[in-house]
Image (cartoon, rainbow, N blue to C red; front, top):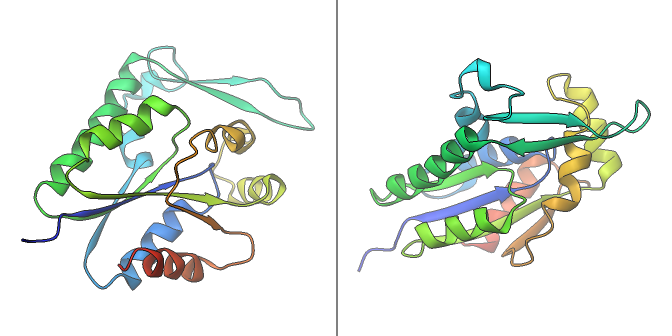
Length: 186
């Protein structure tokens, strides 16, 4: 019997290193892994739904010294994200191995992945680092909304059933990817 498609969900705060780690997994895994990232799906939203109650809404709840941006998902964004999870299932049903780069903070989203992907080899990985390090990365990148990482930081930890937690503080991207590849025999 053929092995089911393998799906690795990388979760973590903005700027923790999910995209870089996903690309490195593609390099080190012995079989092909497709990289599906949440940011590509967010780009599908009409621009008029940026910072809009029906799409992706940002609210500054921090201060100048300690920025924190809360995120709300309106109905259009919720449908889009559910569609993304369905796209993962559709790709896996065609025997594609997939590494997903996502930011999950709500149990229902984890549950939707689990429900859709029961027939596949699914693993959840939390990429982690101290908040001050992630915030430094967020500022250094220059393409992030400052404060997203702070708001997401504790929320991505709400889910307690990670198959693996990888600290991105002391390891370079390649080492993080190799840990994931080794842990799951990829």
